[in-house]
Length: 219
Image 1 (tube, rainbow, N blue to C red):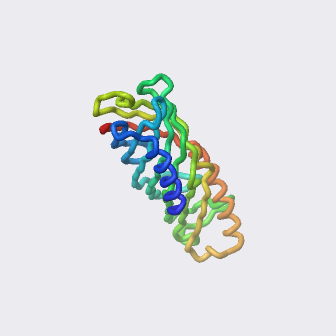
Image 2 (tube, rainbow, N blue to C red):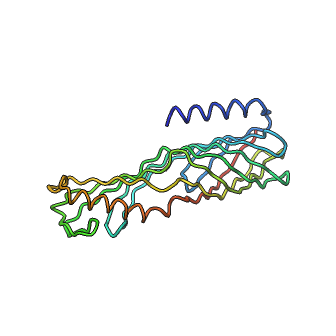
Image 3 (tube, rainbow, N blue to C red):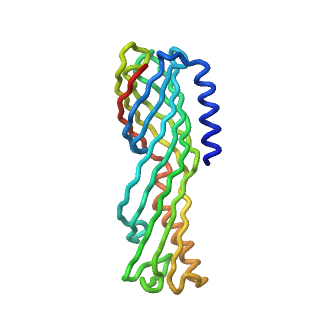
């Protein structure tokens, strides 16, 4: 993942810098559904711009998935490499590119009550701690619309807004338990079925909405 990220960014920077003029370069701070981040943007041509952005967000929350109560820990780390087209020579832009994702999504469930795994009920003492990891595609396409009020203008400060979607694919779910029946073949079969049920519940996140607001300074 790190090697691929470095290669993509290096190629983009090489192509980007060969056409970039210093006065057309800006830096921005953004808050979005991908996290809090920084962004570098520049005019490649009169109607075309390019961007590189990095975002980070970490949070915990509790909720149900496949009728089981989980504590979720999310750490979102991602890098965006985007090309912008400004069709009307103004602030409005149409954007496309890739999101390089290095996020972690962990789930933990500890219950003293009976829990249905697959199609069977098990006690909390039998299961022990139920843990899960959720993985999405490491490289995902992005498409969106937005505005950069300083693009192509002489003013220094600008406001940024983007709305779009990342296709990150169906999640890959892995569940494990540490209770006394954790290695039982029947339980393992039910656990595999539970993984599929959980994947079906989280499949709605394969299209991830992006909304971003920010400010920029143009040099």
